[in-house]
Image 1 (cartoon, rainbow, N blue to C red):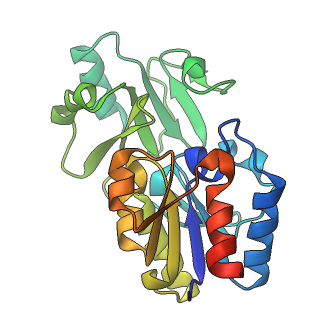
Image 2: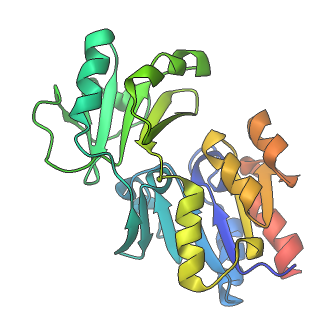
Amino acid sequence: MDIRMIVTDLDGTFLRTDKSVSAYSQQIIRQCREKGIVFVIATARPVRAVKSFLPFFSCDAAIYHNGAVVRLGEKMLDGYGIPNPEKYIFPLLEAFPDLHVSAEIQDCLYANFNPGNIWKDILYTFTDFTDLPEAPADKILLEATSLEEMEKFKPFLTPDLYIQLSENAVAMVMNKQACKMNGVKTLAAHYHISTEEIAAFGDDYNDIRLLRECGRGIAVENAISEVKEAADEICADNDRDGVAGWLERNILL
């Protein structure tokens, strides 16, 4: 199989449930990179929330915030933000006064509640959103536990934005150009690699397009049903190092 780039989601896919990276997975990624295969992580996480994993494995490039930020090492390659996020946040809070809202701006989280119940030990700045930095938001996060609950926010968005549920905990509002697949296309062009030469792994809604449009789309066994339906095949779950196992069988052997 002629795979020249590997793209994987982190949470629920490459990372185990306890957020660890096994020695086996580290070894397989190292061997793939030694063969000249480009290794990319594509995550909804911000930059700061990935740095703790980098001592355990190296990547050639990374897609953060679902595609709002694309980096080669420390170099920003592409990005799509939401200008003036307050113009969306204030009408939402007027309609839903108890809504838990947060915004990622310049790799800092601003929130009107304690987000530790969603993201353990997360650092944040409490705000009423009147004092945000004058910079685009990488994403706006609205607490939502189902697709039905998320639907009520859609009338408040403009056509240049989209909303997507993540881990049945938050609805992510993002620039329509900010998606994992657009980030992959940017990196593929940089490395002169076609999408047919890419193997992509995922488990959640924000991975569906990625799995459909890359040469090989692989869902981990623990993925939601919609992701499995979009995938070309299914590998073992994240706690059994499904990504590494697939790579060893299909690329290294």
